Every structure is written in structure tokens, then in C-alpha cells.
Length: 283
Image (cartoon, rainbow, N blue to C red; front, side, top):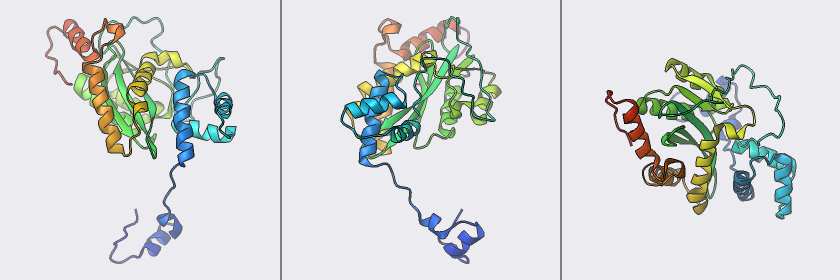
């Protein structure tokens, strides 16, 4: 809101009019230290192996590896990374005030065709001097990644952008399944789905297996791409993720699909289910 080159008002006068301290304008937030970035990478790798580790267990694990850390620090880092452990007992915590959550609709449902069910999730991407977040929209039946976006914040905007792109390219699904994260309970996300006539499904709190296919995607992505590199910039990260997603969709054999890549199966089965419709083929 402040214009540094305003012809009539100095920066100090603009700050005064906005009722903010002049020092706030000049403040530049500090990123995480190299030590914390290293801890976050280790937490991310360990969480893939033991997604039931909460703050206390993760703290013990890091201490056993020789890191002098306390629970307060690990809690902050895990919250920053958006990590939520699987609960070994029912979680009675309530959703964020003002945001509606929806029931899980996939229990007992036979998913037999493309665009019957989509799923989405967010994961943490470590870099050499920072980190980003990645959201993906996946077709549940064929495992094809329909769209994705990278962001440096956990605001809902980049998730809605990915959803809008997927709907524009492939048409809306019958059901969209996500966890109960604030991005997916936000008005922007749920309103976009409702306006498209999509039924909304949400995992139970702490129920890692309710959205298992996209969790497996993250595991594959990180072991085959993310952990093999230390990207310097966001543009490097985005280019590498784009290259891997293309490989995953069009070339990588998938065991659940009889060794065929997801994109091939998606279009084959979509044509079978919609023989009289002209379907635009989008990579």
C-alpha cells in the first residue's frame, strides 16, 4: 500500500496515515537458518517413513541422531511444513472455526473410471536455502496428475488455481477428496467445487490412508526427484518438478496400471466411458 516514489507524501507520512510504524515498512523477514533447513529436510524424509511420528517422537528421533533440539522447535518446524501425524486413536479436535468440513464419501465406493474421483494434497519441497509448497490434483482411478502449482506460502490461492486449471482442461469430477487442511476447507476452494457441481469428500482427521494414492505420489516424487537435488531457486525447482511430472504421467510404468503410465490409461479409459463425446486431449 505504500508507494516509495509518491510525489507528495514521504514514506513516513504514508506510514502515519496507515497507522503503522515506519520501521515495519523497512523490516525484511529473515528466512530459516541453515540448521533449521537441515532439520526440516530430515523431518520430511523421516515423516515419509513414519507418518505416525508426532512432535515428541520426531524430537526423540532427531536427538538420537545427535541433534540438540526441543519439542517447541520441532513443533514450529512441523507446523511450518504442514505436517500432521497419523493418530493412533480418534482425534476429537474440531475444524477451524467458521469453516465447514465434509464427510468422507469414498468408504466402500468402487472407483471404476476416470474423473469419478479426484484427490488433492499439499507437500513440502526442501531447497538449498529455503523451501516451497507443492499442491497436485490427481485422478484417483488412473493416478494421473491433472494439474499442480508451487507456492512459497500455504494460502489457498495456489490450490484454487490448480483446481481451476484441472477443471478447465478435463471437466469437473463427480467427487473431490482432500484432507481437512485450511486450504481445502476455505470458502474459495469449496465454492469453486460447488459451482462446478462436484461432491466434496474429506478425510477423517489424522487418517493418512483416506487419501493414500496422493501420499504415494509424494513418496515417489521425493525419492526419485526432490531428495536427489538441492535447488537454489524457485524457478529451478519448478522446472525440475515439471520435468518429473511429465515423466510420471507419460513414461513412468505404474504397477497398479499393469506397467502402463497414468496418462495413457487415463485417455484409454476415458474414451471407453465417453465414446460419443469429443474429449480434448491435454498433456
